[in-house]
Image 1 (cartoon, rainbow, N blue to C red):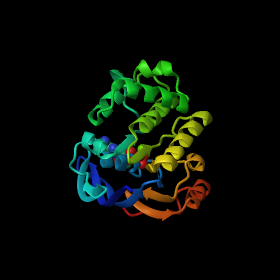
Image 2 (cartoon, protein in one colour):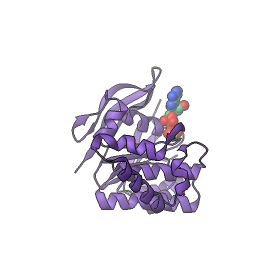
Image 3 (cartoon, rainbow, N blue to C red):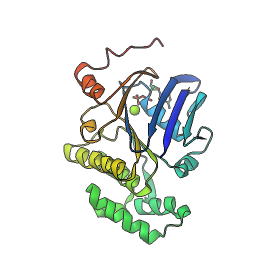
Image 4 (cartoon, rainbow, N blue to C red):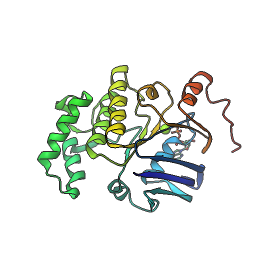
Length: 245
Ligand code: ADP
Ligand code: MG
C-alpha cells in the first residue's frame, strides 16, 4: 500500500506564489481527480510534485510512503515510484521510446531486450503503431499519439503513483477511450494510485475517480465524490468559492 501525501504546499515561480496551501492525497488503487479552471495551478502542482525545473517551494511537504520528496531531484522521485504524464510532453530528438524505457529500467537490472518486448506488448494494448517506437521520443507525433505514448510509458514503468496532467487534452474519442481504459485497468490490476488532472468529466467516465477536488486560485476549494465531476460539468466552476488572491 502506497500513499502520496501533499500537505500545506506553497510554491510558485520567480517569487510569485501560485500554490497557496494545497492539501491532498492519493493511495494505491485510488483515483483522485483534480479539476479547476485554466490558470488555477493544476500543472504547477504536477510539476512541483515531480520536481520540475524553475519552480520554487515556499512551504509544506510532499511525501511518498513517508519519504519527503521535496528537495529530491526528479530522477530520484521517479525511482521512488512517481510518474508524471505531462500536459505538453517533451520532444527528445535522438532518443527513441525503447531507448528511454531501457535506460529507465536498467537500474532495476532489467535487460534491454525484455524491456523492448514489454514496450511492444504495451504498444499493441494502447493501440500505438509499433513503427512509432523507433522514432525519436515525441518528435512529430500528433497530440493523440503523444498521449498514447505517455500511457505506454506509464504501463511499462509501473510506478506506485502516476500524475496525469490533462492526458485527455487533444484526444479524439477513440484515443480517449484507449488511454482511460488502460489506466483504469492498471489501477485495478496492480493498485496504481492516480492523480488525474482534467477539465472534463468525460475522461472520468472511464477512469472513475474515488475523490474529486476542485483547485481554484492555488487552493483546494471543494472536495467530494465522483458526482462532483458531473456537477462541475453542468455548472462550471463559478459556484466553487473564488478565494481572494
Ligand atoms: P493550470 O494548469 O491550472 O491551467 P498553471 O499551473 O499552468 O495552471 O498556471 C497557474 C498560474 O501560474 C497561471 O497564472 C500561470 O500563468 C502561472 N505560471 C505557471 N507556470 C509559470 C511559469 N513557469 N512562469 C510564470 N508563471 C507561471
Ligand atoms: Mg495545466
